[in-house]
Image (cartoon, rainbow, N blue to C red):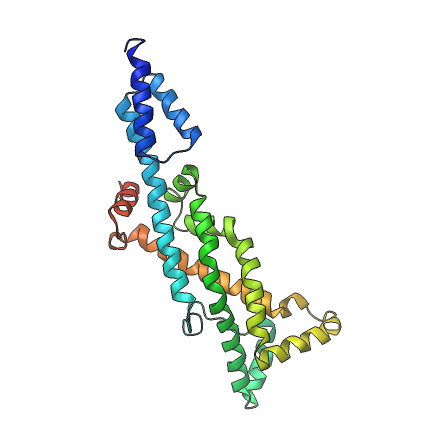
Length: 253
């Protein structure tokens, strides 16, 4: 290619890339450098479109998985009626619960556990905005790592980028929910008063009911996101758009 024509084609290629794909400035420079070093305009443009497809496809898949997970769990009985994520009595209180049932006080145990699950159900809808931010912040590198990674790569990405913010958002909602119910509120007051005495016999962190529910709520949410991720990876019928089919089928070739 002569010295006059190549810069003109490069400019045309740059315009096509800008119009055809959403790529970062670093990506744009890299693609242009490849063209100037001798690659054809077609191969460079194809690469740019591929990067754009990967990011768009992954974002679409993750947004769908998040929406499904939040809608499934963030409703009445989303946790309580689902054995996969149902929040049980904390392990530190299992013996107390067993004794209560043996002495005819099982209804209090049931009420206690219902409160824990209702608190998680109220907290989970707050995850939509936080996980949406994580999706929007995803880079080409992130998307490729997820696409070519293990079956839980997207779920791990969410844990890494969002878990701290989720805990911060969930905790006050859980605190409010558990503080409004008689049995659970009484338990929290008892632990607060007896914490100093109990600390000599057991790890009082295990008695922090609100942290326990917050962690269980996040675990349940990530568990459902992982299920959605695996379905899209393994089940072609779960890829509901042409873009999802195109991006995920590329990993099977």
